[in-house]
Length: 108
Image 1 (cartoon, rainbow, N blue to C red):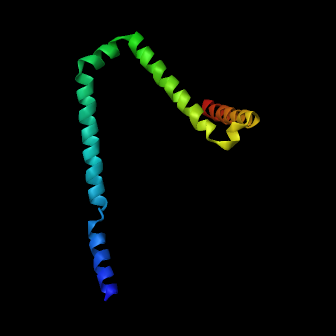
Image 2 (image 1 turned 90 degrees about the vertical axis):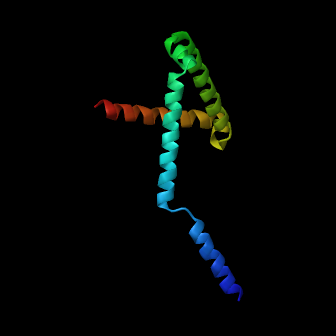
Image 3 (image 1 turned 120 degrees about the vertical axis):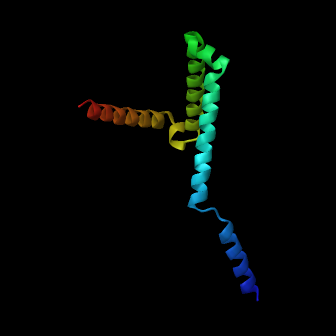
């Protein structure tokens, strides 16, 4: 008897799992909401003033980049290979070499 009760519960659970159509609707709704938010922000006066001021845009960009660098540095502290100075140097050289090869291939 307990097997039939479990089967009934699992069939009810299967019916409540969202399908592909539901996920597509959610994705479409999210995209529409994001577009409305972007349009509303673009029309606002503070955003227009910031876009018109090169100094304010430069300061915001610089602060954003600095926070990004601090985040990367903190993330690198959690990687055991990068805790060692020599490991960080080797990983950095490998990344620089890979970037150089990629740029060489892209340039022709």
